[in-house]
Image 1 (spheres, one colour):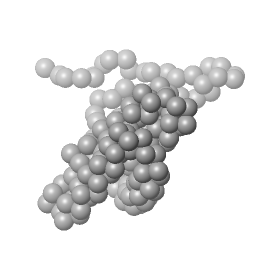
Image 2: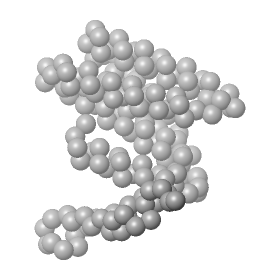
Image 3: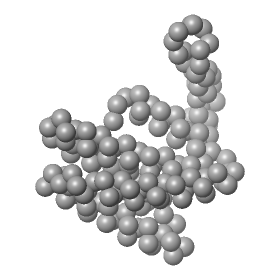
Length: 158
């Protein structure tokens, strides 16, 4: 995943509530899998395996976020483990044909959570995050980012 995409995901995570965070994790899985397919086309085995590992790490986060008080969590855990097994096979045996069906299934789950996220009005999970203002503010032709409030009221308070 390119640096700019990682920064975008990081920024979105700092502003997300619980259901939006799940949507972001699904998007990250899809991005890593797309990166894996592109790396395989370029014959870059290391990037291929690293991209699949990134997708599996995101799936681990999804597994850890499940609330097992609900029956749906048990079913989702089974799906996530299935995806991880298939991705392990795709990584070891370089079977790229296993990736598109997983991307399609993750895409369907993402659509469902996007609907839920639209109705979720809870506050962002992270507090005391850095304010970021981006836009065409100081330069006519380039994007400028202003990181305001550099450090006051951030982190732990004693």
